[in-house]
Image (cartoon, rainbow, N blue to C red; front, top):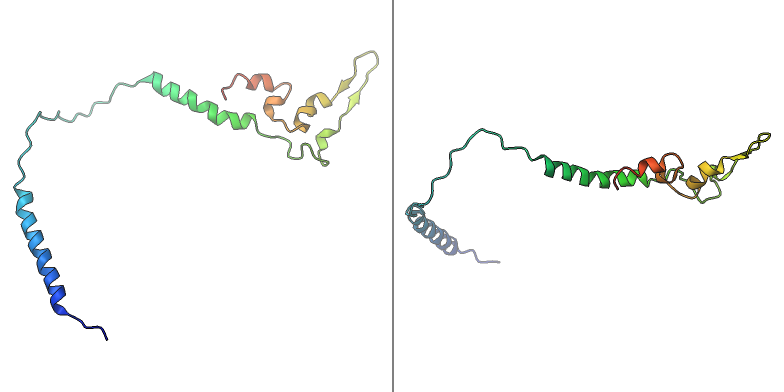
Length: 128
């Protein structure tokens, strides 16, 4: 059976009281700091710097747009279930043949919007 001593707890409490009592007068006797006076607070707004804000927004735009430009549009690309892998060819009389594989080929290969014939050059203008 453990022996319980009351004297150790009482001694600890007495030591803590002495330490805290000695620290209180020392904290109140701290010397006053002398130095330049702080300016009075004002409610005026600061001047707006447009160039850094615009540079930050345009810098972040590339990181936001790049994933959308490279997004894979055909989830079944390069697989046996790819419906865009099939092409249609039309040969009108006296006209060069027209094939759909020129439009669907980049998507069937796993490309994104940047690989499309009409949209790709337009997306090249965007950063990222």
